[in-house]
Image (cartoon, each protein chain N blue to C red):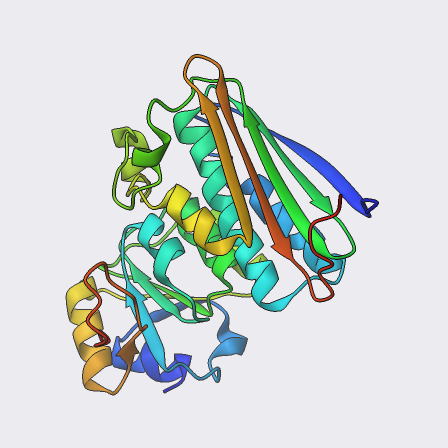
Length: 126
Length: 148
């Protein structure tokens, strides 16, 4: 799947990164808790979130994420988008809720980032 | 070993708007200096965590970046209030963050354990009523080991 495929599946607007739509994506994560994203995400992946504050973009920069998807029709402020553009992120916005967006992407083959859990039994989520 | 580069960032208490900007600068500078890949990512994550901790929990402090030929050092010094129980603070999920920090997506109690996980060497000293010092080191290719 590419970022363009994700945008099509989610009927999403491409807010930033129209030149990055061909980048392939294999995994994603969904969280409003940047602490968890910082602690558990080890891949250059996609973050689906309902948070639109500057820390979403800063967290993405620290982790070299490829793409941000804002759910439930939320559009971040202009300065946040400018910051995303500066760091070369693709940013999508969909009217779907985070739950539905994740479900649709999963249905089309996207899987969760492997994440260790406190009660790790060797089985991966996703 | 002689430092190649060092710079300091003052971090203000409760400045949630600017929180993370020092870490953005640290990551960009190190990238310009030729540091990349896994080490850069680990430095960036640990730096962001420690900077957020200064904003959320401290009375203010300083974050210092030092680049040596064989390692990157991050050093955080704050002016208080200190941590009552460091072993509790190192536990995943244990947090004293306020609602403002939580509303921004932080305060899940992952900060200190995540710094420790990302750094090759991690140490924390804290005294209640005085402050907290955190030292982290990230080994670069060609790491020479502890210098005496």
